[in-house]
Length: 153
Ligand code: HEC
Image (cartoon, rainbow, N blue to C red; front, side, top):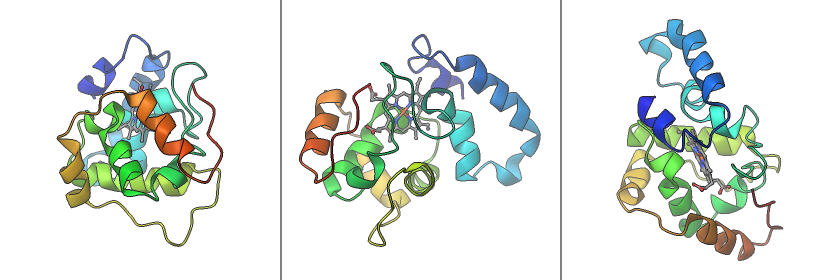
């Protein structure tokens, strides 16, 4: 939580919302702490918003990008290595469940039956490597897929 707020905290206009969500949900307790949706609300929603549409000019929408990116090994590696994912306080297994939840719940496009859930092992294998040139990597990966390039932030 603290680490997450530090991540580009100055750029995020929703830090207060994030803190408010954390306060609201603090009664949920340990039993529900591993629920992907709760992890999303506490760690990601402040910037990505409830529906994943992001903030124009700052945070890209994930609503059209998650399906094409999660369909290739390079795209899946990017989804794990992007700073919001890799530097979150979540364990590899929690991050795997969260990314799978995001694909299934935030995508505006249909999730194909061929979609494979992320595993903790897969996340762990990518996570330690730091991603440089995030925006360029995103543009390259999305332009090489068959779907139109989602709007840049
Ligand atoms: C402080 C704001 C902020 C927070 C909090 C945040 N992100 Fe992000 N996220 C971004 C930005 C900005 C990008 C665009 C890539 C970049 O510049 O890092 C991004 C990109 C992404 C992407 C790539 C999506 C795409 O279409 O390219 C994923 C996946 C992602 N974030 C996951 C997460 C997860 C999971 C969390 C919570 C554990 C999270 N983010 C928290 C700001 C944030």
